[in-house]
Image 1 (spheres, helix red, strand yellow):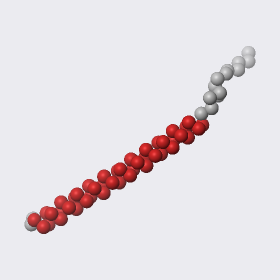
Image 2 (spheres, helix red, strand yellow):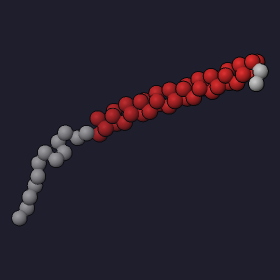
Image 3 (cartoon, one colour):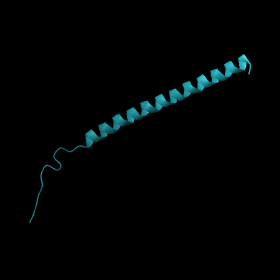
Image 4 (cartoon, helix red, strand yellow):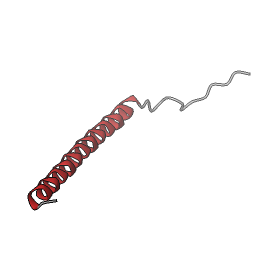
Length: 58
C-alpha cells in the first residue's frame, strides 16, 4: 500500500471515530436531560399526605 492511500485510510478512520464519539456524547446528554425531567416529574407527583393514615373497620 502506498503512503497516500495509507494516509487517506487513517484520516477516514479518525473521522469515523470522531463522528462516533460525537454521536455518543449527544446521546449521553439527551439521556441526562431525560433523567432530570423524570426526577422533576416524580417530585411533582409526590403527595405527602397519601398513606399517612390507615382507616380500619372491623
